[in-house]
Length: 612
Image (cartoon, rainbow, N blue to C red; front, side, top):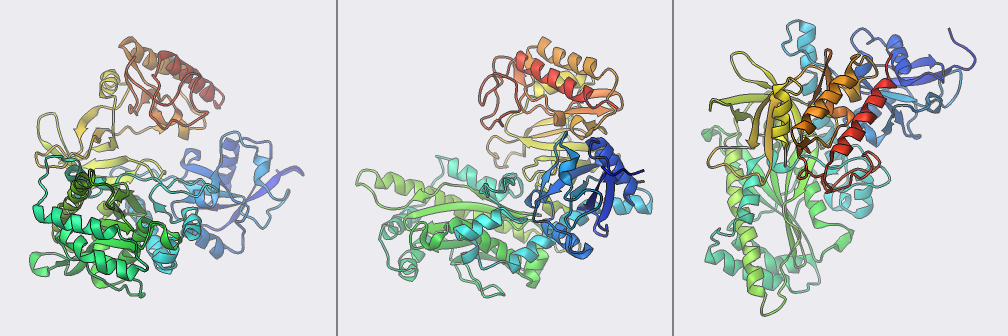
């Protein structure tokens, strides 16, 4: 029964492609749980979706309802980046603020519903099998939208101009290179590219290896390159004519010019020819894209940004080889940005997003003083030789690609698919889905390739409190820790810097962040026991937030130990969000028992306020 004070909201599902816009009438004084329940009661999906499986997003004021097709097209283009068109609804927000007009739906979308699918581990029915394909389908659709956008966008030289770049970084398909539009606030950070292809990890190792022998001919070519890069040129053509051969000699590889289907072309590329006789996808693939500028910042854009757009435009082409290769892998590509006497090396991949990472800073190539030039020449030659060696590894990777007509789910995930078990055997696994919606997610749900497959969680981190994790796991208060060590422990593998791979059992439960009620009656007692056990053994936890506490049946467990460690040694990370932590907690500061206890109290208060 409705009343005169009720409001009607226009609602649409973000990831249910055939879902129409529909109206939901509710008392404006109701809470978020009641709103979700009302939405599900009005939705055709109410039988298969529970309140904990939906997130609510309030669209920006510019999102209007024109018709169902227009609304769905908007959501399609926003893909997995709803933050480009909407703000996540926080708990406790006044529902009346959602409405544009009381009593009936207006001409604006009031709420976007994000459906969070829960997949069966071993689908048997036709419906379950179709649901299990949703992850691959969603990722492929996101990837296809990105490719369409890359082709429709202005040429890389224009897209990289600061005004266009600013606009693009606030949209649905930014470059995930860390640069962001401050008026939008959407994240543009992503996992490091060397998790997707070891050639990038090889480069970082070579570049950090002070014992790497650089051939004399590379040193001589680098000296010539630096000498000519120090000159000031009147135009790009004369600069390129003076420097190109020396850059090629330093890399010991020729740079070519190729023209894309739409007529755009990078300043230079390094390619590899693949042969069907070797079992590869036949054709030519690009290993490296180079963009040059007469001077740093010339033309109103950054050469590294232009190189990123050029790389994406190349892999968006519809030539036979490019289409086949991008179906099989994430298109790993090195980039060179060369502007005036400055040069930078980058790595890029295309998953369902374009991820770009600067593998070096902008390195000075100019001659400076008579006493420092030789040392700088050694440094530059070392970097260029490291790149040359890494390009050889990247070529080997492309040669080994096996043709297939089927889209490969693996192209969307890190390339590491095994870990050593306690008995020394190698356990192979495959990725199923990311466990978080954020672009920076490095935690994945996976399935082992064993006679009796297990569902596991694989994550990557620079540091991990394995001792604290194992302490709680022995008491059944955390998932069993199956592995914590090098990303690739094989003898000849790159180091991946200090990254670790952590493998644990998958627990079928719900995090406190996803629950609106239904907490165990003894939730406080269980969580207090966990924190006390940690402290009693001389450890601190540090990150007792809702996403890190899971309820499985009636049991409470901790699931993330990135910050955990010995009391008096464990510290907070350098990037610590404000207004989320107890008094006294600060970036790089010590994690204390008092901090844990304060967060425990906040957690208990949060859950008590949401008991139904």
